[in-house]
Length: 154
Image (cartoon, rainbow, N blue to C red):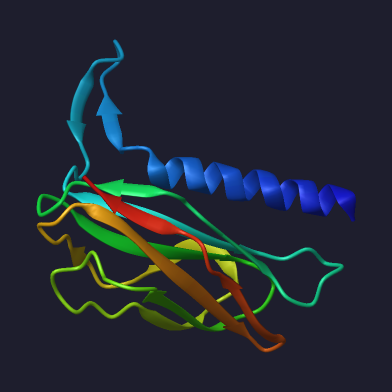
């Protein structure tokens, strides 16, 4: 059981690092060829479950940084549990960093961590600031939240 928990934590960390790192291609000498999409910031939400617990845990890249008015943001959910996630919603605590009204609710995310389910793209507003939000995950067993992540616009 401890081994399953350790594997779950390691997978969560690996996905968070992969999502927070810019995606680049390199040539055989290690030189950078290009960036996949420098204008899009992907925030990873990883839902994992310890077999000893009925509710999963929600991990998220935090804090996440984006350039005001220059970049866009999306949240991608990886369901690393054995059951379907009924609903995942993202709600901002006060103001929103989005200049549009993106759909930040996903439903019926199948078990398994690939492919990720991603929200609509949020265009960043022109004002710098820190924007806290809550991620609410609903499963057949109940709800679980991560109430403390934030997006920082510079």
